Length: 126
Image (tube, rainbow, N blue to C red; front, side):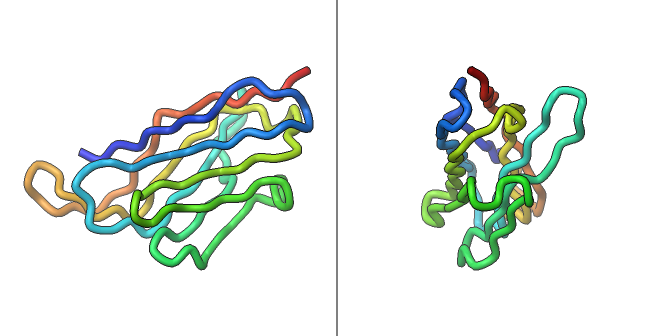
């Protein structure tokens, strides 16, 4: 099975920084891209940032985080990071990691699918 394990969430004051990590594990051949999404209470889940895993060439950010957040990846470890700086109270949400276009061995068969992590809470408050 493929699992995504997130870490790095927590409580931080406005203007502070946090770094999230997400590591994919399992018998995988390839991951097209990985990224971060977030969901605040009463709101829909929204894209924060995505990056292609093999080349790192294609990076997308939500307008609300441009210039403050930076996504990066370690291709060999199937790991993606999100450096969050100048955090604001409106960044408070559960942050979810997603791996898209994952070729993996599941129950002995090659399968293509997308996967989500369990989420990590980020709270920005004084």
